Length: 410
Image (tube, rainbow, N blue to C red; front, side, top):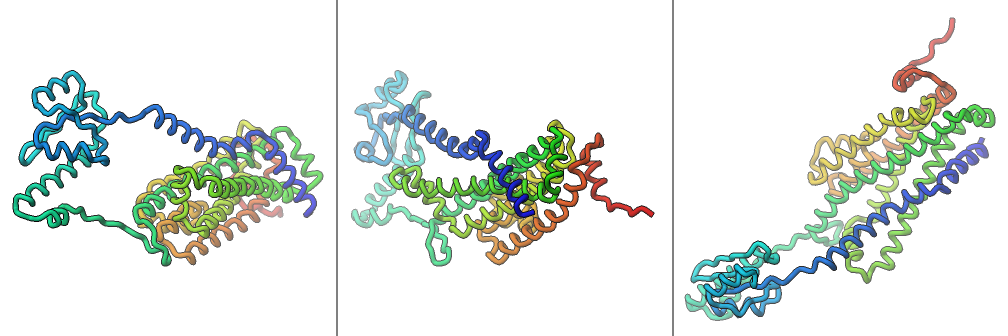
C-alpha cells in the first residue's frame, strides 16, 4: 500500500508541476510586484513635480526666509508688488500669490498651479508669526527659539524587550490581517480547484475504474491529497527562497529595504506558524474538495460541486478584511480563531495584533489538525462510496444521501 500511495502521490505531483499553469501561479505574485514597481517607477520618472513659484507680497523678512527654506520646496518670485503679482497670476507666470499682513495671510493659486504643501506652509508661517510676537515682547533669540520649538511625540512598542516604531507596527498589523485573509483564500481556492479537477477528469474520462482495479479508493484518495499538498509545499519553499534572495540582494534598493524593514516587525515564529496553519487549512479544504469531486459525473459539474467550498473559504476572508483595523478586539474574530476552516485567518490575525498568546495559537492549530485527521478518516469512506457512482441527482442530494447511515438488510 505504501508503494502504491507513493506512486499516486508522485503521479499527481509531477503531472501538475510539469504544467505551465503551475509555474504561472507561482510566478504571478512576483510578476505583479515587478509590474507594480515598474509602473510606479515610470510614473515617478515621467511625473516630475514642478517646484511651485510663489510671489510673496508683504513682510520682506518672511519672504527671505521662504526663499532660503529647503523643506517647503518653494521658488519665491522676485515680484513683490500686489498688482504685479495679480497680473502674473492671471497670466500663469506664477503658481500662487501669498499676501501677508500683520496677523494673517492669504494664498491665492491659479487653476494649473503645481501642488503646494499648505500644511507645511501654515506651520512655517505660524512659527514666524509667533517668533515676531515673542520678539515684540522683549524676548531674546534663545527664548524665542525655545518658545517656537515644536513638541515631538514618538510612539514605540515594547515587543519582548525589542523597541519598535509604534506607527510602523500598527500599519504592519493592519496589512498583515488583510494579507493573511487574501493569501489563504487564494491558496485554498486554487489548490481545492486543482484537486477537484484532477478527480473530475478521471471520472469524466471513465478511467477511475482502471485506477481502482490497480489500487484501492483509499490509496487514490490520500495519494491525490498528498500530491497536491506537495505542490503547495513546493510553492511555499520557492517563496522562502525568494525572500532569502530578496534579503541578500535588496539591501541596496531603498524600496526593497523598506519592505524588509516592515517584514522584520513580524517574528520568524509568526511567519512559520502562519505557513503551517495555511498548510493545515489547505489540507482541510482539500479533503472537502475530494469528497465533493467524487460526486461529479464530468468536468461540467466540478464548479457546482466546489461552490460550497468557495463560499466556506469566503467567510474567514470577509471576516479578516472586516476586522483588519480592529486591533484584535472583535469578539467574533476571537471565537472563529478556534473554529476549523475559520481559524487559519482569525488566529494569525489575533497573534499579529497581540490579542492572543502563543498557547492559544498552538491550541487553535491543534484543533484544526485534529479536525483534519477526523475529516480525512471519514472523508475517505465517503470518497470510496461515491467515486464509482454516476448519478444524475443534484450534487447536494447525493452528498446528503451518502451521509445517511446505511440500513442493514434484514
